Length: 297
Image 1 (cartoon, helix red, strand yellow):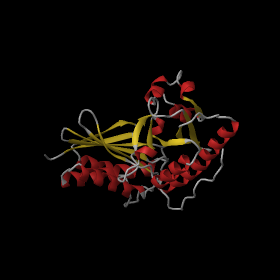
Image 2 (cartoon, rainbow, N blue to C red):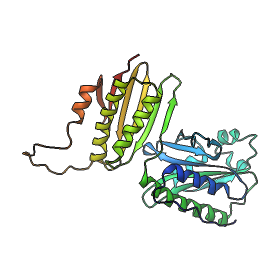
Image 3 (spheres, rainbow, N blue to C red):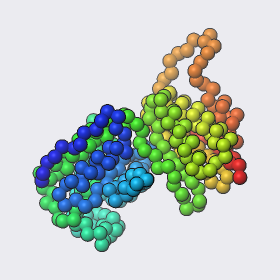
Image 4 (cartoon, rainbow, N blue to C red):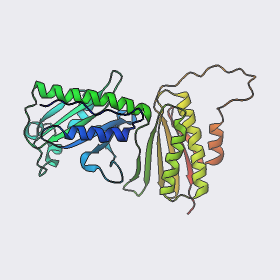
């Protein structure tokens, strides 16, 4: 199996650019006809996924997938170990998944996780149009590629948060937008831009949008200041009600002691703003705060 280095990333590379490089690199492997990458999200409960056949002029075609579905890529990520074989070999364990490949012309599949010293960041899947030996040399090459891509992915994640899946339509008609916010005070501005773009796309009235952006800004600010893992934002528009949830992803940071005579403090009033501007708000869990706004017709 030919060995080749992964393409280099610039210091400002984001996740989307990394994905384009990764998919191009994987498609260079002999006999590979399709490649996909998945990134862990929501504490590992789900994955962001895209593939070479999902690329469009409008973007990378990201979607959310259930991280617990019985497919080889999920098992590779969960176990931090490769899963590979011909479709016949995989069939006893992944019969539904293998049945879905009927008529595609694929003969074999390999999935390998992106691992670092700290965590499993996701993984890749490649589909072959010919049977593969999957011997020790091929496994070593796949792991080498995964290790290099994981290193570059870590660099990209330090530059920017995971890409959002900006618009999902649920079966009940609800519109849903989600975004991951990095553990960096500078990311609050990105949260505001994300929500503004989403509400503009949904034709939400200006007053409601302005109130929602301000409320979200306050909650995200609290999350990135007081926890170590950033936060996950979900926005839902359904039956004239806009609901936003901010879920803390990291451990709580013990605040520094502030002198009681300090009359000017930078934080601590966020929930008062949310209470004043929203129709209702609350705390779902210790790590999730939400607010709701009525949307003008």
